[in-house]
Image (cartoon, rainbow, N blue to C red):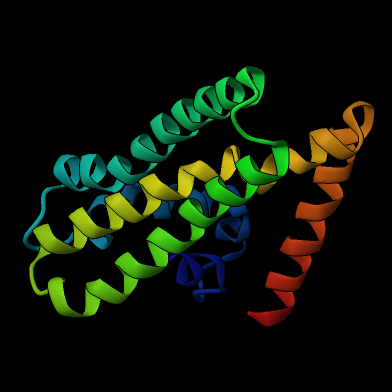
Length: 157
């Protein structure tokens, strides 16, 4: 839908500006992106649930990982491995269960919310490695890592 507003639609020269096309797109947005069975507000709440769960999981696992390291119960390597396994393995299992349990919208939303919630543990997993390796340059190293990821994703799609 968005692309059709950006391509030339045969309008006169005054309509060739991007702002006019964007204005037309935003005016028609509510009618072009509706799901017949779900209202816009309900759709927004359901779409935000997985990310809220991921945020809460990231905070809680970060505190737990810090406590485990500070108390000496586990080594840094063990903490990273445990939380990375939980953050990657559990969503993988849940995605496989989606095939069998996702016949209704409630089932799909529940499973996707749980999967992304567990993925929040990645903050206490491998995402902490940048801080461990080079604390003074962790922002730069993580930025380069995500840049490589983004470029490779763009090349695939």
